[in-house]
Amino acid sequence: MQTVKIIGGGLAGAEAAYRLAKNGIKVKLYDIKPNKFTPAHQSEKYAELVCSNSLKSNDVYGNAAGLLKEEMRMLGSLIIEAADKTKVAAGNALAVDREKFSEYITEKLCAENNIERITEEVTDVNLDEYTIVASGPLTTQSLSDKIMQMVGGGLYFYDASAPIIDFESIDMEHAFFGDRYDKGNGDHINCPMNKEEYEAFISALSTAEKAKLHGFENTAVFEGCMPIEVMAARGHDTLRFGPLKPVGLTDPKTGRWAYACLQLRREDADGNMYNMVGFQTNLLWGEQKRVFSLIPALKNAEYHRYGVMHRNTFINSPKVLCEDYSLKNHGKVFFAGQITGVEGYVESAASGLMAAIYCERKIKNKKSVTVSDNTVLGALAKYITTENKDFQPMNANFGILPPLNRIIRDKAQRKREQAERSLSKISEFIKEINND
Image (cartoon, rainbow, N blue to C red; front, side, top):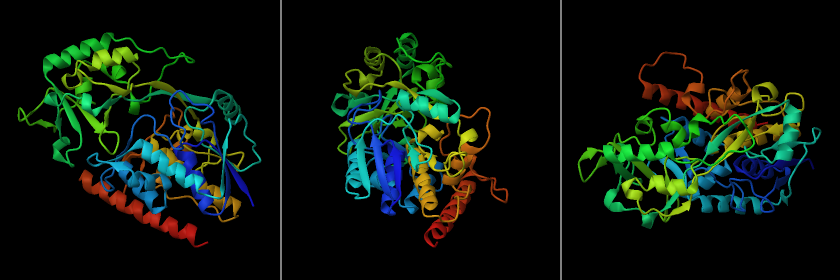
């Protein structure tokens, strides 16, 4: 029986391994943990969530991230199944208890007889062997060097994660529960600031000391996960239009929106830990405690984890990958996850799911098919494989979907019709791959 080697036990690798195993393909799943850990990982389990516990919106008809998750549900995604099973209250978003999430996926993988789990660092790729490289944006240096040699160079940016706070240390006299415009179940904790408090916070943030980044001279950051200190440097009020946006958050004590307002999102099912939404940072840990304590609700905050910043590596996919995620010149080798230039947890898992589907079809000598780019799954694959001299990572969004065949000026209606078209195309794809 043919065996597929999967390098990396993150979301993409876990998704790919499970899909192949469930469809009768033997898998050798390689991961360096627990023998080694990357700078951002701490858990020994598979599919560890690093930056956030949120998988973004669950709105299928109004948000591309929600639509992508529904497409994956229809295809039997393990990652979405795990998220649905371990979700925590987070308004309209799908957020998970990250420990239970990884534990669920790990148990599923361990129970699969077709998966052989190997704790070992992979330093080479055999181009004649069926392989899915899902080593992630924090690929070890030796493997990264080999990949860059294979694909003729690579790209990178810096990514950051937000701090996690102990619930009991939040001063609820200066905070309140509620979701923006009351859309949701009131699950977020909101930490308002008046103008003077915001001014003091911005002043302290602008002079706070950052951790040194090693290994690269060009410290490019990914726009979708920008450190707050970088964001604040772009303008005095930038944070008030970003992670400190007060719009739609009515303080029950005043009956008004605050001058600025930080939101905290539940990190675990029991509500013991909360994530500072949008507060990715590269400040030194002591500086984080000093600066963030200027937010009244966080004056005595205790941190389960401080924010960190790390390098993310991705290949120049438009030059080297086909839409089925295989290398143009070596069809047995597939790439999946953030190393391809898809950005985000769900997007990474989605690429692993699709790479596994396409890999299985090659192994079983089935006809070549690709999912329509009228779906988010297909549009992401098309984006990362279309020539682009300024190629940068991309999240799921309606902008990458082809326009409808008629003009619809109402934005909400336009998104709904794009979503309906997408789900129809996914249904067609499922029938096609199941009936041959």
